[in-house]
Image (cartoon, rainbow, N blue to C red):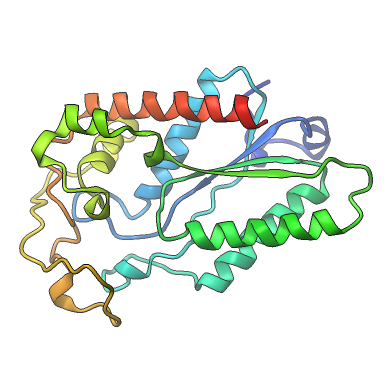
Length: 251
């Protein structure tokens, strides 16, 4: 039984699954332009996790997704719902503490959202430190891996499929890779509409509050035209293979 979802298991089945690697898909509730749904980051993480479950030989339990995160750069757009950084840190720490308390010691966040990373890392550090310094009741010291899907994608692959259309990862919000992945993983949720980013200014620094001149009217920071389901399939295959390799190496 390498495919199991936490919510669908009974408590005796949870007890029997303590040797599993717990996967936590992580995303955001955040605008992704007029063509992608608010849950895009989470949906990509969940879709990749589904494919990982289908392909790996390891016993995985998929925990409920961590949807509410930190997405302040898109607060000006309707649909985005934020947690504060401290709330997200505490939430990550509390979730991990609960998993460790129940005897699980191997946890991987499959993450689809950039801004939440430092807060999840801080929460993991807090939780791991408390376990390291406290009484673990004979249990092994837990390990947490935070795996961001885009970090498995090589520059060579990006050059091959996108060429000079590639805007750089800093502008890859609702653009080529996310749109391609959604076309592959959740095609029925992708809308056909004008996705032009329009004019906006890109700065090499942050301005707070985030000014209107730095926000594209569409919510799309780079042109997604050129995204395809086939590119999405290839992206997903690369990421799933990388995640499986990470599980084998770290757990």
